[in-house]
Length: 165
Length: 199
Image 1 (cartoon, rainbow over the protein chains, first blue to last red):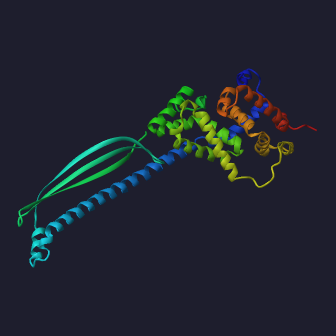
Image 2: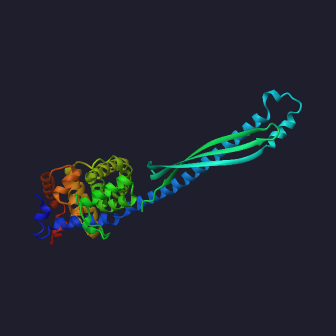
């Protein structure tokens, strides 16, 4: 039984009128606050997520570059100072020669994989992209006639906040 | 459950199926715009439930905001989008209970009968400025469930069946609580209903 429908045709009960008036006066001014708070939190989350992603991407790129430089430097040093030459008096000249190697070229291969939507806690949905990079550099040592090739893999995961409007 | 559909000018038409679609969209795509529309539809119901538990409109609004943010975060755990109203109602009740614990009044409130006497005394000396406190005092004499039933009926204008779905009661139980609540409130608010006696 639905007594709301049953009482529709009856004169308004003063008690019901009083309660309706009281509740409306109390609660109506509060309507809309929840939506505003929700949208504020969502926007704050997006801004936080954006700056966090930017910092993360910067950090990842920086780390990859540092690792690449480190590897290249290590290889050059290794080539420049082979064990059997370490005690030779012309060691300094050899290092100078190694440092003077000619760069033949660099090949960079990219592959970007869309890994779909991810839900980032407290941040909302984001699109996850995995970018894989193979960076191959070649040098030629005119003194020894050796050719050096270094391949450095990079991987970058990017989370891009999805606009939901 | 039909929620606030008729009261908005946001162009949304339709009843619970529209709400279910919006909930599904918010759930599957993480669509915050869809969830904002859900909030517009459900906020009054949530306010009614929180107010029934807290007895204060400002604290009820705080509870509703917290509850809706929680609902957004936990939306993935909702198995049946058609049951969103009852699910949200449950979250609002839990948040309200937590808030009530945090702001527990220090003064002794007394038993239901004692509060009825206090409510009656307050309402003997009613003027326009005291009406609000008087009705609030009278409502505070009801138990939580009956107060929820009264607030959902007279604020959200929900039917007994709809109130029952939200609170986990049968329509008959809702009607019974409503009848008893009116019987309990009427003498407490008689001064305001009938006007002061002329001597």
